[in-house]
Amino acid sequence: MILDAARLAAANLLSPASRSILWKSLGLTLLILIGLWFGLESTFSNLVMPWLGSFLPGLPDWAGWAATVAAVIAGFGLALALALFVAPVTAVVAGLFLDDIAEVIEQRDYPLDPPGKAMPLGDAIGQSLKFLVVVAIGNLFALMLLIVPGINLMAFFLVNGYLLGREYFEFAASRFMSPAEARRLRSRHSTTVFLAGLVIAAFLSVPLLNLLTPMFAASMMVHLYKRVEQRRGRPG
Image (cartoon, rainbow, N blue to C red):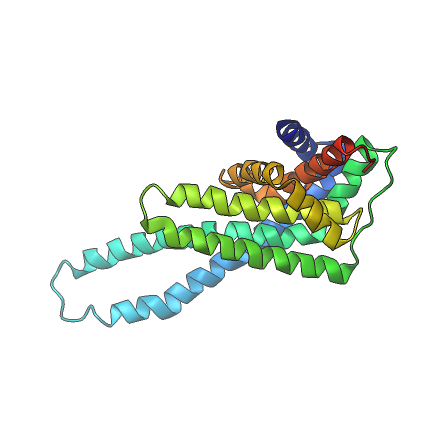
């Protein structure tokens, strides 16, 4: 059930019906990340580098080389910081396009089922901010465990698997039931949802491909929700 939902979600990424959503989601994500890069670079150049420069006068001849090494390390640090922003940024973008993605899948793959109900714009923005907070907290927690050998990678998958699985499944279910009912349904199928979240976390861990995480996760959870309901003997 999980692998089948993942296969269908991957196929949906490049389907003609989803192409416009793909470009809008990808374009907005890239714009936000580019803005963050320039913001981080400007902060480093205008605040950090002058502070480091204040220590250079009077140092030996190798101080210039030390500054060069520091600049290279800083470049890697900026790249790492930007990489850590990918998950929260994609979470923000997700809330703006999830209903569009879900509607494409429901109309194409489940035309005989009752259609889902899209969230109002205010709720969509709230959902987007909720995704941001949840994913940011999860990745901050995983980042804190980076200093513990053998646990950091496992922490990334466990934390993101739980959080992403929970949020995206409840989103898919909330198109057909109240948020409270969606939470209860997710709780009854918590193991399945968590395992599906691990697949999303694996997708998120792949550079560049992780920019498409919102589309993949939303698509996968719509298919998973439909299969859960079919097992219960109910149409989606």
